Image (tube, rainbow, N blue to C red; front, side, top):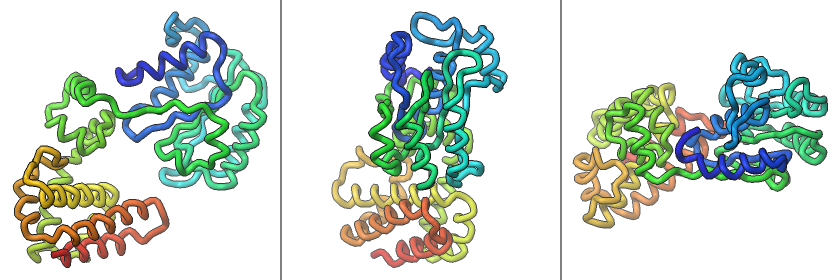
Length: 321
């Protein structure tokens, strides 16, 4: 249980202890807030044979040990068969079949769909039928960072549990407790204030990767870098991060162009590189570039040719005056 999840746990655990859980929950919020861990904790607690007064699993009973071993018969998980792919209708039909049976051990059956927005249209329609006629003593948890991609009919049949980024001081204390030595304020800013995403920045050395990309990004303006070669390199390496970093730099250029204060800069550590550029560039053209960056970011989740998209983005940056 993460410290920023206490209020969500308090609310749902009271309903669980009172036997008033809904048949479907939608765990909704940005990436990096531990929604999947929350779903796992709730699954353990619901199936535990000896949970405590706060609703937490004991970790010692037969049910808890089976969960720890990954062999509990009343748990079913639905996820894409390959990362980035869709959840298919056959997977949801299997879920429906499992949820229609009786519990084998703990009295409850629990299913988690993660990420729920990965369901294709047929899968979503199949799930709707299950949500309309849920089996007794069953819980379906949908975990989603993009609930807007779910149909309104599915959302309306689930009780929402919203997760929002914690106060910065809570995240900073937690990150330091995990042994993070880097600038935690910078990490949280780059991670949209999501502590677990900030931890991924550290574990994957994203700050170093960002510095490498920044140097090449600046090199495009001076003619040192070739946009086609750079797109070929980075679309294979980290296209999503690159587009988001570029978008954040353009936003900071707009801030620097609009005000002399650097207090609101997201990328405070690279201000010395951005400040001279802000003086050279036109504010209107920066907004045009920002629109293009945002459109590219949205297209990343589609069937777009990522390399061509990045080539276009880099060429637009070179031409921005």
